[in-house]
Amino acid sequence: MPTIIAAAAVLVTALLPFAAPWLQFVLTLAIAKGFAALGVAVLRAGLISIGHAMFFAASAYAVASLARAGVNDLGLLLILSVLGGALVGAIAGSFLVRYRAIFFAMLNLAVSMVFYALCAKLYGVTGGTDGMPVPVPAVFGIVLGEPAFKSLLFYLGLGLMVLVGLAVQRYLNSPLGHALSAVHTNEIRLEYLGIPVWAVLLIAYVVSAALAGLGGAIAGFAIGRVVPDFAFWTASGHLVLIAVLGGIGGVPGAFIGALFLELLHSAAVTVTDSWSLIVGMSLIIVIMFMPQGIYGLFVRKEATSL
Amino acid sequence: MSNAIIPLLLDSLDSAALIFFAAVGLTLVFSVLRVLNVAHGSLYSIGGYVAASICLFIASRQLNPYLSFPALLFSAVCVAAIFGPLIERSLVRWTYGKSEAVQILITFGLFLILEDLQRVIFGVQSFYEDAPMRLLGTTSIGGVVYLNYQILLIGMALLVVIGLRLLINHTRLGRLITAVVTDREMAQSIGIDTNRIFILAFSFGVFLAALGGALATPTSGIAPGLGADTMVLAFAVAAIGGLGQIEGAALASLIVGLARVLAIYLAPSLDAVAPYAAMLVVLLIRPYGLFGSLTARRI
Image (cartoon, rainbow over all chains, first blue to last red):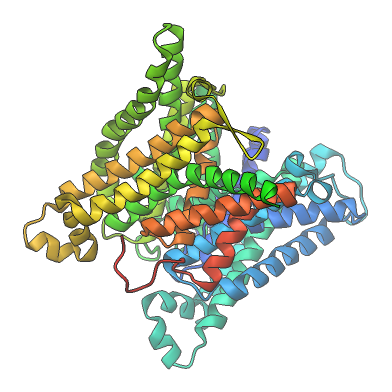
């Protein structure tokens, strides 16, 4: 039954741009942020990262720099930039996964703010606060016009959402994924069982960085420009917010949260400028009254609360 | 040589004093309530907006310009009296005993709300009112001209460090706070009204943030986005010093101030990186901060 609902939801999302073309950009962005929020949610070991926007931005910057260096193929750019995100994740993760709880959150914040400040200040490399343009790449050697490319990007994102979502679900249900939740429950017992907590966490961290990187690359293509604000701490806060709104625990939660937030954004800006106000209030209400997020409304058992 | 050192030292002290007000409030609230208030930076900028508005009002009515000094203090008291109890009672109290993730997210929600409220009330243009700074004039130290206001700021920061320490060690309220910090349940069971202590401590934290914002306005003005920038700086300072450590926050402000000024002197493009790089280095070596430790009593 849940499979049918999920399939129907993906189908409806795929058809929406036909009804309202302006929705295509909103939905592409929602999918991109959904990937990044999924990255945050994957770290289920009670670790909350206020710094994942760094991987989001790192990968988007990787796309822009590679494009400037002459790489001009969508597939190649996507793969390389996700690998870039994962590489940054492996480097940062190798020392960050030693920390827990609030110290983990603080260190992630510190690393991401160093990254943000560097992006904003190294004018020669990153273009400073002006950012870098992301050109429209060729797809398998075929040069597309911008509207055609944006449509392609949306359907590619949607397809990746399903494939990557299934893969992440498999990962979370594998022994490795269960070991990850067990870190939160009882880390010492896990060590006694002979499972290296450090390795379990590092793998999860790299996976989560790669997911955030995938989101960043898609967002870079969709927006056509990367700016340092991609990595600012409020952007990281928004990613955590999306993960919590949707419901930490299940894979669909992250995408539901992102979709909800982006649609709320589009609806709110037509009425008022103060959309942060609305988002802040919905966040507080969701945490107080629906600790399992929006996804928790559909699936009572699977979703875990914070 | 000394010609180069004196300006460097004074600049660092000045930069440290401004960050210190925001950081010490954050650290005080964390030590008593054990909640990391992500909305702290917004309260700093609200303090700045209120102070700037009152000072502009004084200027527009041609009142005695020296009124703007008490006005700075008054605006901080107002912000604390209104927002302190309101936020503590409605939102923060709900998060006691919950996981850090919940506390961070609830206060992040509050941060988003407060940032937009400021935009609605005060608009998006920047405020600039430098009457208090102009009134005090300048002093020349070692051939370099300094604003007396900067020196006043450094004095105020010192006053807050000493005052807080005296308050905590030598007054009845301070002892009650120490008791709550050391063992909340035991304090409650011997009849200390912990709820009252929480409201007081939180409001005092808000007061310090708002005071920092109010004192900063005459030198640097105030614009949207200041809250977010201050928040993460204050957080870096509090984390370097060790969350919950007052003297730690003071020392950490000095480190961050010095790091910033050195960066400005040596590699101007890296001034924004310096505080976070310092935070990263300190936290990697001592995740509990310079003064903090897992078991030591906080405050």
